[in-house]
Length: 150
Image (cartoon, rainbow, N blue to C red):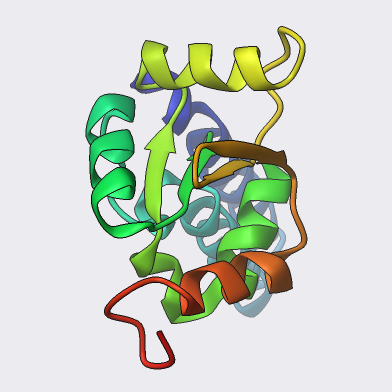
């Protein structure tokens, strides 16, 4: 679990150091701007930005019951972040599994990607798709029961 927070914490520390340098140089406005940017980057790259992760067995069970896609991801992954941002509010409909917190989820991703932990890996109807187009994932989410168009 601590591994997921390394990148966000480094961003906050670097931003703090740069802001302190700007403040010491007599530029309080620049210091505030720099710190704000780094804190926002840390927040976006933290597990807090993603929907709550569940375990791989529970995600598979729920997906089998209602057909929702399962998204295997990890904090700090730019492609996972891109998928999350492009899905917008629809992201909450998917089932998210953090492979750094769930060894079974990591094993599922390795099995789908020739031993590599390549994320995001999205499983729809039992079939894995590695780094799929976010528009395609949105369409899959629209087809699930309970969605506005599904």
